[in-house]
Every structure is written in structure tokens, then in C-alpha cells.
Image (cartoon, rainbow over all chains, first blue to last red):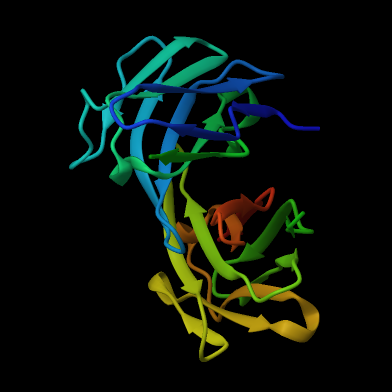
Length: 116
Length: 113
């Protein structure tokens, strides 16, 4: 079964609203969580890396105030897209690794965000 | 629903030996195909991708992959493995108009000297 739960799988929102995406590890405590964004028919873009007990490290070009990442607990990370705009429409996917699992990477099922 | 299968969870090869990592997908149409590598403690790095055209794709670090429609496969190859290639390798597929990305479960490569 799935070891990483990502919710919601699909969300449609109005421009200017905020959207929260959850990523939860089900069977283990996550050492590191990664958030990726994927543009249509293109490769993944790493947005940020979140280690337990510390703030997220954002990649160059990713707006911290726009994409708020909270590693709330050892099993939960949230990505909040604030004041969403149509250009934020994309596929967002989280991945999780754990020292307990030799840092093997597990992926969430992704969230398709559409901003109208 | 589309799915991606990487049959080998763990592979060990000697340095200098050739490598082939298997990837199979299930999808009716031709998908967009990717291979990613994850080194310990780091995020994913794109090795190569296939969208259309020549079915043999060249990537970074000396890797190549071949798309075989008849076998629904996109196997990753390297003629001579280096110790620094030890990592986890993920095959991924983009399918459908929603461009949902689906990953395989990964293959961990160990290189012996």
C-alpha cells in the first residue's frame, strides 16, 4: 500500500485564494521531505527541501512567501500556495525519505492545482 | 490507471561493468518518459527524457535509455559503471492531459570496486 499520502489529489480555486496541500508519511517518521512542481509535459522542478526540526530550504527562484512550507511534525508537511494566480496552476508532488529506510525516496500521488 | 514498474529493487554491479535498469509502464498511448537519479541525502536529478522521435535517448553522465513501444519499456543503460553511480534510480511517466507524473518504486544501485 501507499506509504505517502498526498491530499488533495485535485483542487480548483479562484485567483487570489490560498491552497494548502498536505503530504503525510504513513508508516514511518520522515527525515526529509521534498516538494516538487511539474509543468505540463516537462521535468520536475525541486521547490524546497524540508528537514525535521528546521526550516525549509528553498531553491533559487522559488518565492518563500508565495509557497509556504511547514514541516509540522515528523509525519506531516504542508505546502500552502498563497494568493494563487493562474500561473501557479501546475502539478505538485511531495516525496519523503527516512533514515529508518536508508533514505529511500517515496512519492506522494501528487496534486493537480488549477487556478481560475 | 497508468502504472510504472521497476522490477529490480536492488542491483549490484562491479565498477567497469555494464548496467541495465528495467522500467515498464502500462498506458494505452505513448507516454512521456523520464529517468531520475537520487544520490544519498539529495533531491532528484534528471538523467534523460523521451518525448518523441529517436527512441534511443542520450542523457547525462554517460547514460542512455531506449523506448520500446512493443515491450512498453524504457530501460536505462550505461556501458561502464563508475563507483559514483551508486544511487537510487527512478523511472517516471507522464500521461494524459493532466500531465500527472507517476514514479516507479526505484532501483537501488550498488557498485563494488
